Every structure is written in C-alpha cells, then in structure tokens.
Image 1 (tube, rainbow, N blue to C red):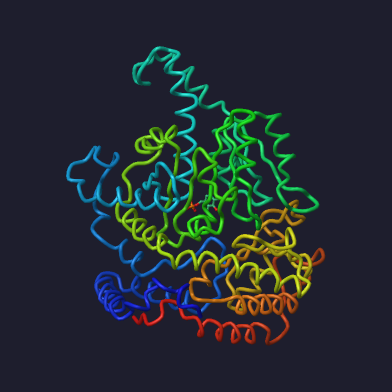
Image 2 (cartoon, rainbow, N blue to C red):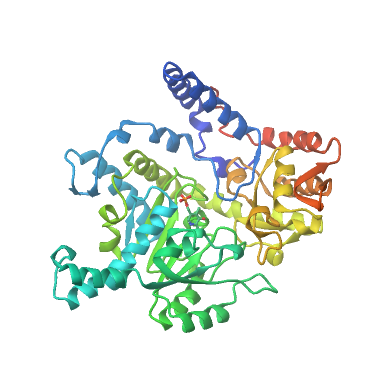
Length: 487
Ligand SMILES: *Cc1c(COP(=O)(O)O)cnc(C)c1O
C-alpha cells in the first residue's frame, strides 16, 4: 500500500468521520430505518468487492460529507453574482471556488460548475456551441439583439437552422459515448450525425481516416473522448482536423479527467489547450461527487455561462460545494501520484492478461482502462460479467469493435483501475487481479440452450467462485476502503 496514493482518503481523520457517519445514520434511522440499513450495507458491499468498473471511484469522506448539507435546500438559478433568486451569497462563494479550482487545476480560461452530470455538461456544451456558431450570427444577420425580439417567422427560420447542424463523434462500438451522436440519445436527434471508428486491424484511432471523413461530412462540431477506448488520443491532431473544416472541437474527458488533472496526459494528450470546449464528469477518475463540469475558451464562455436557463434549472449547490472540495484535493501533489498509479496499474493489469493469453482490444492500454475480448474464452460479455460477479469481481460487459454478439450480450468486459487504486492497490495486486479474472473465465462455460450454446446462461467449475472470492478478500483486506471508518 502506498501512503501517497491513499492520502486524503480519510485515514488521518477516520475517528471524526466515523462519529459523523454514526450520528448521521442515527438521524436517518429515526425516520426511515430501511434507508439507514441500505446505506450501511452499501458500504459493506463496496468494501467487500473488487470494483473494476472503469467509470467508478471512491470519493473521500470530505467530499461525501460536503454533499449532506443545507446547501441542498437553496435555489440559485443564474451565475455567480447574477442570480434570479435572493440570498445566494454563500452559493456564490461555493460556485466561484469550484470554478476557480477547476480553472487552476486544468489551466482553462473559464469553468462552469453547474451541470448535474456528464450528460448535462454535454448538453450545455452542444447548445453553447450552437448559440455561439449559429444563433449569435443569425441574430446579427437579422439585426436583432435578442431572440425574444424576432418575429415568429424569423424565429422559425433560426430554429430550423439550429436544428439542422452536423456533429461527428466516435462510434459507440469503438468506445465512444451515447451522447456523441448515438441516435437513441438526444445528441443523435438534435444533430445530423456521423461517426468515426477505429482501424479494424489495430483497434487504434486512424487520424487520416478521421480527417477524410471530416473533410467529406464537414461537421459543425467534432467530438473526441470515449468511455471504452483503451488508448490515448492526440488532441492536437484532432484540433488540426477540426480546423481544416472550421469545426468546433469539443473533448468529453468524462472518463480520463483524473489523468489530465494528475498530469499523466500532457502536451498533445491534454485536451484543454487544444479544444474549444471540454466537458467532464467529476465522479470518475477525478474522484469527486457525481456531477459535471464544462471548460471553455473565452469565445465560448459567455454561452456556456448561460447553461441555466438554456439547459439547466437550479444548480445542485451542495454538489458544487463537494466539487470544490474534490478539485482542491486534485490540486494536491498526492493526486499526481494517484493518477500515475492509475495508469501504471492499468498497464500491469493489461500485461497480466496478455501474459495469460487473454485477448485485449488494441492489445493493451495506455490509459486507465482495459477492454478484454472474452471470445478468447468462448464466452459472451454477459456470461463473463455474471461469472465474475459470482466470484466477487464487479465489472461491466461492453461491446467491442464490430461486436459479433451485439450491444446487449456483447463480447467484451471493461476493466478500470481508478477505484482500486484509490484503495491502495499496486502493480502486483493488479497482476493478481488479472490472474483471478482469467481463473474465473477459464472455468466458465456457456450453458447448452435449445438452439446451441446460450448467450446468457453459463456454468462454472465447482469451487471456482468460492476460491476466487477468498483470494479477492485477501487483496481487499490488505487495501481497506476508508481505513479506520467504522459505523
Ligand atoms: C460517463 C460519461 C458521460 C455521462 O456521464 P453521466 O454523469 O452518467 O451523465 C458522458 N460522456 C462520457 C464520455 C462518459 O464516459
């Protein structure tokens, strides 16, 4: 266990945090004991499973406690110093601090701390881009100052223009996110969209192919960022591609914001200096509360700042307070140690799979996630996910490029290192995790179905789940979650 990595996770104030949680649970218990019980059980479950879900983490007790206050009760529509509600002076302090920490941490000219989630952040960003690129010039052309001044006919014309723009993002099956133009998501309905993928042979982004598609389609918005692509992206190159056709370049760093904050991704791999707009969640590798952030250049800042009323209602002031605390943590030197460990551990996990002959999409990783192709075990993602869960290993199934089993059963399992790294897991521990995963999958087989092997049902060799559970418990005991915290 590396002291540096777990610093800030509460060991140094565990007694105080324990008292706080015990008292809080007694209060909750007096109203709805079943919620107090579920809350206790959730900590137990999180402590006792190998959490390898790439989008999850463990926020510090300081971050968690910050969310449970009366800031939850305050309405504060508007922006700092400019609210549609009275008595927002303390929310102003909170939001200004969250934005300041975000600007300083990421080196961004402007930060917006209000989005409730990653999806909200992307919606704010998309509409800010449309407002800047389409609405403002449209208004100027019509000689109007505000959309409320337009005639019905002029507004209808402008609305049609806003609804008829093009977006290009990474396809879902190669690791992109549903908010990057996937038809069932609102992003695929509000934009005319096309998607770029990865090279079918290597699994890597092929920048020349992306450039050719962009030249042909000429999107207004080019989006980079991913949820399940195990490699780094050259954002300088992507910006050049966007510039060629005058596209706004947006990066959704929801998954890897912690690696940007921790200076693992620098230069061409740091999206902030290259993108016009950057969005993120705050609860994944960044290790904060559930929420979103938008960073922007001066050009897009005024439109992003109107996220409310454009997309959002009242901000979650208690969550903005927790974002400020988490971002303050991420500005400490320990967070860089943590972020580097997240990347090193992913490397170790990938190496552990490769040396045991398990197939990986792209053959490895250079970020925080690993995508295992479970067809090498003769399984679907659904079967592998369930068998691992039976053995105390929490992952999620995920499509792989050109997935033969489709988006429901899938052929992949996605693993991420941010959560277990927070517990103090090191490179050797992750090699052991790879060994346990392989042990489970080698001992799992598709069950027979009426028309051949089932895609969902499976059988496991006797004793496998218990054996792996016991081995996992050893790793978990050696790296406790919230050390010293007792309820
Ligand atoms: C997780 C994720 C989101 C969505 O975040 P939510 O907070 O769940 O809305 C958006 N974009 C990417 C790339 C993500 O990985």
